[in-house]
Image 1 (cartoon, helix red, strand yellow):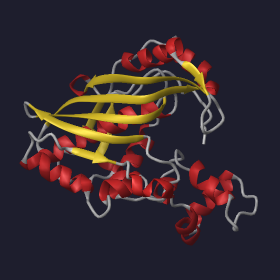
Image 2 (cartoon, rainbow, N blue to C red; image 1 turned 45 degrees about the horizontal axis):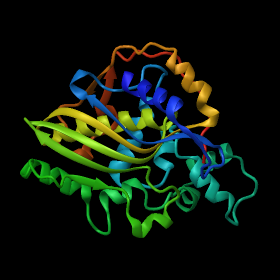
Image 3 (tube, rainbow, N blue to C red; image 1 turned 120 degrees about the vertical axis):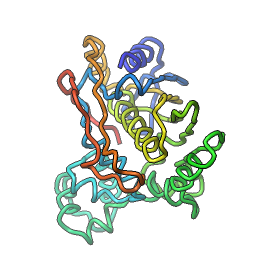
Image 4 (cartoon, one colour; image 1 turned 180 degrees about the vertical axis):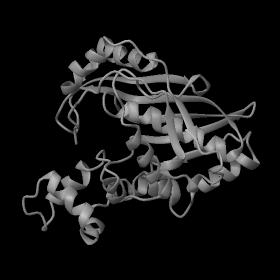
Length: 288
């Protein structure tokens, strides 16, 4: 994962200090691209331990079209909790509950979860119902029947629904490409939290390429990650510098259940990694 470390180094050395929506402050650069050859191994970050379980559950959640955090909470995935909690604090039902108490209510009370756990029409909604269009279903059909098309695209950026979303999509647009029976993908990410978000984004879309390739009878090619605003939050600088002192370890291997031939049929148990080695985890606060 030297590509990721090169991104970190580039932003630290060339970035400008900027204000941001969260009032945390960032060091930011505009325009950066990384390429990952998926034939060489699965690009799960090794310079800090990365929570692969959360990556899998989040991607399955997107694919299902779900936009409520209850599925994630039920599977002990915490990465989306803060956004509905911030909305809950603004509601008439808020009585001083902590984030932990809010999450407990989501897990134990279906009606509470239905009312306060939804994020609005975020990724899964747009992938499966973009103004009535199932983009994922169409993508699979077109990859199988017209692989040389230049229109293999999924967009999460639905301008007409942005104001209904708890968080507008950061990884907003992905294009797929078939050549020599290999499937590649290029993601455009408008906003990239380098320390917390980018390692998840790389692994998530690499996994997505593998899953789509399998159901379409293709091999994997490259994942190309194109970033608009690439930033390191000011409260993550020391964590990023720590990673730059660590030597990357060999990449792990992704193992999918070869019997799955429908993209919507994958379960958590169908997805695994082997030989994952990493340095210890590094914690950092999320900016909401």
